[in-house]
Image (cartoon, rainbow, N blue to C red; front, side, top):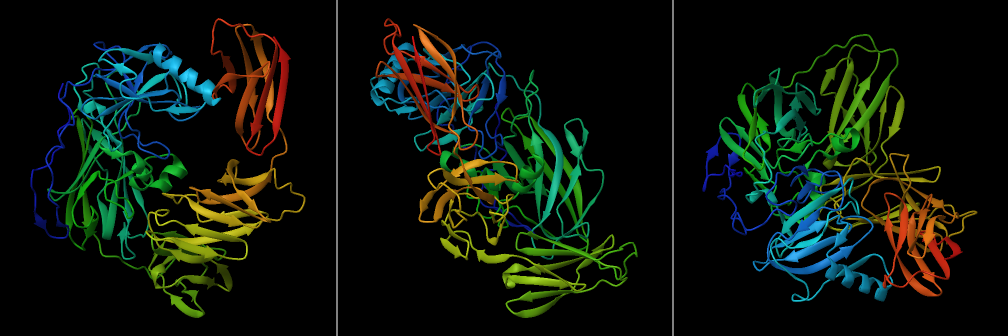
Length: 637
C-alpha cells in the first residue's frame, strides 16, 4: 500500500509576480526507521479500523497519533510494536489514563494509552509503587533493563481510561526530542485507505486595512461543489489587497465513518506553489499552537474547523513551507488568479479545489436606502483594524467622531453595505477612547496595546495582568471590564499560547476566603475552577483562557455513596458540585488502601496490594475538594 510522498521539488527557487520567492523546498522528510520496523499493536496481521489519525484538530492540540478501534470493547491484547524496554509508565485520572512508553534501540519511543491493564510484571511494579507513595496518580521511569520487551509481546490490555471518549488504543511514535511522527508513514497493511479527503468549504480573510472581499472588509465563506475528487466554487471570488485562505477539510478511511484529519494541504496560485503544511514531527510542547493553525474564532463560535492556508503571526510550528509572504495572497485590481488547493491524506489520496479570484478595486456608494428607522452603531476588532458599522436615517453616510488620546478624529466611511456604512481605523495609529455617532457616545474600553513576544504588565483599579513573552500569538488590543463581580479580560474568542498572571481585588464581604476561589465562566454558563492564592484581599491566579471570571465560594463538601462492599473490595460514587475533586484516600484498620478512580463514571474502587488477604475491619474514606471541604465515610467489612 503506497504511503504519502510529499509533492516537494528538491529545490525550487522561483520568483513570480505578486507572490515573492519560494524558500528552498526539502525532499520527503527521511523516515526515522525502516517502513516495516513497527508491528501494528492491535490484532497484528488482521484488518483494523481507526477512529482518529495524526493531525486531527482537537480542542487545544493536534491529535498526536492513531486512535485504533477495539471492537467497541475493552480488553484486547496490546502488542509491543518493536523490541525495546519500558522507559516510562503513568497512571492518571485524565489525559492518557494508563499509558506505557517503550523506548526502542533506534531512539524512537512508542506509546500505548488508555489501557485497561498493564502486563503482570509491570502492573505489580506500579501497584507496589502506588502503595509506597500512597497515591493513585503516579508516573514512573524504570531502568532500561528492568522491563525489556520484544516485538509482538503483549504489554497490556486496551481500555477506556483517562480522557478517552470510548474504548480504543491511542498509539504514538515519538523521537528522543519528543516530536510526534505520523504512524501511518509506516506500512501497516492492517489499515486500508483509498478514500480521498472531503473539502467542504473555503474561507477568505482580509489581512490588511485596504483588503476587500466582494467589496467588504469581512471574512467570506463559500460551500464547495464536488465533481468526483475535484471541487469548485459556484461563483467567482472578487477581492482586493492582502488576503488569506482557509480550508475546511476532513479525511475518511475505508470502512469507517469517522471524520479524521487531513495531513497535508498545498496552495497553488497561477500554477506556482506558495504554501504547504504537512502535519508530521509535531513538537509535543508546541502542539497547543493548533489554536493559531486554525481559525480559532470560527472553531469556538461554531465548532467548525478551518485550517489556514497561510502562516499566521506567532505560529512557529515546523510544519510549513511558504513564500516570503507566508502564503498570503496580494490581489491586484483587474488581475485574474487561478487558485488551487490540494488536500492529501497519509495514503496519497488527494482532492483538489479549483476556483478563480478576480481583482476588484474597492468602490464606494454615495447613497443609501431609507429603510433605517433608528440610528445604530456597532464595532469589532479584526486583526489591527477597528471596524465600525453605522446606520442612520440620512441618505448620505455620516462620519464617525473618533477620540484618540484627547484628540478628535473624523472617521470617513470606507463603503456602504445594505444601508450600513463601514468605517475602518488602524489601531496601530493609537488606541481610541470612544466614538460619537448621531449624538450618542460609545466607550471602547480599550486599555492597552499588548505586543506579542515580550513580557508586558497592565494595571487598573480592579485588576493587574502580567503577560509572559510567550502568552500571546499576536498583538492584543486589551479590553477589560468589571460588572456585578464579573471580571472580563479580553475576548473569549482570542487564544492564548501560554498562561497569563491575573490579580484581582474582589468584594470579600461575607466571603470565607479559605473556601473562595476564581472560576472561569466561559461564555457565561460555565464554572471552571481556576483557583488562586489569596494575599490579603487580593487573589492571584494563572489562566490560559481569556473571557469572564468570577470569585465564588464553595462550602459544600464532596458527595460520597457506597455502591458495594465485601471481603474482596469496596466501591463508591464520589462527586463535587463546584470546585471539583482534589484528593481521595481510604484506610482499613489504619492501613492505606489504594482506590482507583474513573471520572467518567465518578467511581472509585479498591485494589489490594496482597490479593490473598481479605478486607476486614473498619474502612474510612476521606474525599476533599479543591476548596478544602472534606467528606468522611466510615463503614465496616
